[in-house]
Length: 368
Image (cartoon, rainbow, N blue to C red):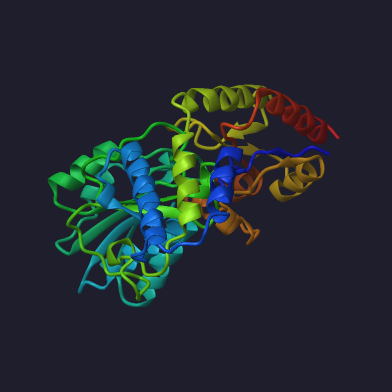
């Protein structure tokens, strides 16, 4: 049975051209970018080229790109460093991905002062929310550019401008927007974190943007790799694969995926008992968080799985708990609606034929 994969916000299929780059590098003579011999310097040059590729895509300086294992590591590095400062106050929301949310809960347990904004039904923060929360000790605002469960977008440009005007550092979780539309990192963003496996790149590789001149304490201590910010020999093959994945993001990616998502939602919502969570908010092109009223989401997911349609109850880092989505509950949806909700997340590799077949299978299941 051919699988129809609509869980691309959990991870994506690696692009064959990315896999080709990684395999070719792995089959090369081994070399360490920190070594001073010719092979080491060759590996160092490959890292430099990859760093330039990533920086050019985001329109930042190459010296502001730091490779790591992914956004979880990048976010933890920055948050723990900021939290070390005496009386540091951090503002976030109660809608964040588990990586941010659980890190904040950990830091709170260590005495950090964290404010959780509650955007409710709009599912995103704006400047007015922030203005009411700042203190003299506010050292960081940390939010997601796009919510990975609902696809709702935050107006990062507006918030970044406000943060810049008020001299407050801004940390962005950019995982759910990279590869979905062309992005430019606003000047007011101090830090941003991304993962390769959400853009048809390799798992276990990502990067952080940290503005030039900003000081961060490393999470991993040891060698001086990545400007002293991340000790340990770099994953050259993985980083080259990540850079290739970024090169392969089509210029029309947003239009392509939007057509699939919009067709999917148009067909679904012809049924009155099916509703789109966050439908009235600005959303990224690839996510449909769907409430199948009077259905049990977990049961429906299992039936779709048996039919070959792969979807999710929400964030992969949280859905294994089989509890109601914290994000949807905090948006004000009823528990019954939340328990009936399933996330469909698409990618540039999905096709209209897959959408049509998935809809056919879904309607068959619902009509049984």
